[in-house]
Length: 191
Image (cartoon, rainbow, N blue to C red; front, side, top):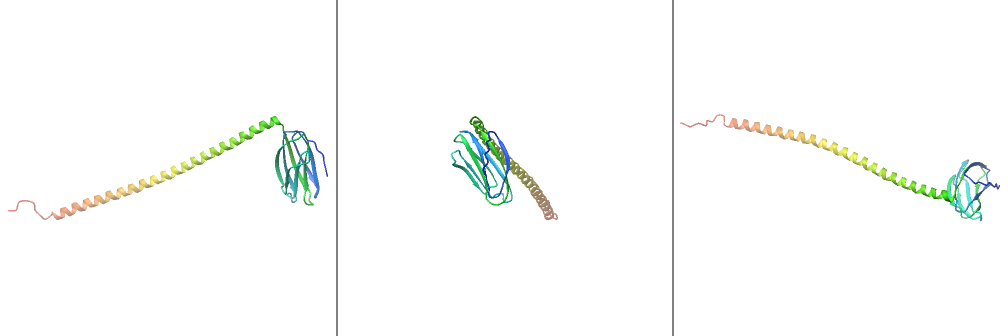
């Protein structure tokens, strides 16, 4: 089954494909334009599909087997009709939804700029994520240090209170022992 379809702008279509059959779509392309094709296959055993993309000279540019979806980009090298073919590898009916997109050369420069800007945004996001992770780490570390400091202060307070209590007990016991030792003794002249 061969269907000729000429597309000059963005097209999103869906079509059915009977089991064991092939569907080819012709796409008019210009040299140096970027061609993008995205497709999704649905139906029973949806991954039993083969997609092929041919140049106007009938050279195979891209091919995928057993993929229920795909997204491919190709810079067209020739003017003429490019073909995208879908073939069912089993006997079951499948529904193919696909999208063709052409980007002219001057739009391609804009796309490259956008790609570069997107990459820079990803890098900025990764940097911000690293900074955020470091801030969370610093905050967690600061909270742990605060908890340890409070715990250490409590332990030092109890240790100081214990030492003061021990010193008071030692002083009282020394006073008591010394007063008991000197209690019956006289310190005056013996006559």
